[in-house]
Image 1 (spheres, helix red, strand yellow):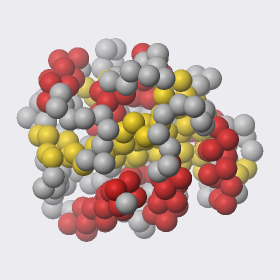
Image 2 (tube, one colour):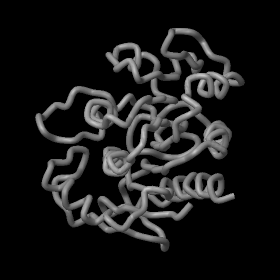
Image 3 (spheres, rainbow, N blue to C red):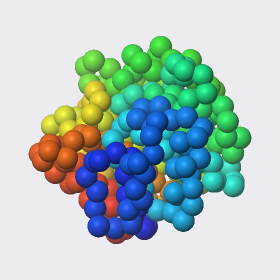
Length: 244
C-alpha cells in the first residue's frame, strides 16, 4: 500500500508522499467547515487505498474525509484508547473526540463499527448506536466486550472475527494511544496493548478486503526525540505488516 504523510501541525514527517496542511488554521482538535473544505482540496490526489499517517491524535477526525469517499457498504475498525464518540461541544465543529459519532450519523454506507482497545468504563458510559460494538480494557488490564463479558487475550481475534460482517470491506483507523506507554509515547492517555498485540491484530486484517488505513498519535513536538523515535518504530511495523 502506498504511504502518505499528512502534516496537520509541525510534527515529524518522512520522505514519502507528504501532504502539508500545517498552514490551515482552525484544525487543532476541532475543525470547522471552511478548514475541512481546504483540507479535502489538499487531499484530492491522495488515494483512499493506502496507509495515511496523520500527525498527532488531535487530528484523528481526519479519518472522516477518507470515509466519505467510500462508495460501497463497509465496516470501520478503530484501535483507540478513547471512544471518540462524545457529543460535539460546539455546534457545527468536527472534533477529534466525536468523529466516530459523526461518521455513524452522517455516512449511510457505514454499516458497522468495531472499536478495540478503549477503556471499558468509558465505553460503558457511552450511548453507542446499535452499529457499534467494542472490546475494551478494565482497571485490571483485562478485556471486556460490549456485552459485558470478559474476553481472554487469546480470544480477542475470535471475538472480533465473529463481530465482523465477512461480506463487507474494511477501513482501519489506528490511534497509537491504544498502546501502553512503555511501547510508544502518545499525546493523550494511553491504553494497555503491546506492540506485539497490535501487530497480531492488524495481521488478522491483512487478508481482508481493506479499503484504506490511517494512523495517528504520537507527540506533537519535534524536540521530543525519544517519543518521535518510538512512534517511528510503530509506524514502520504497521507499514511492514501491510506491505509484506
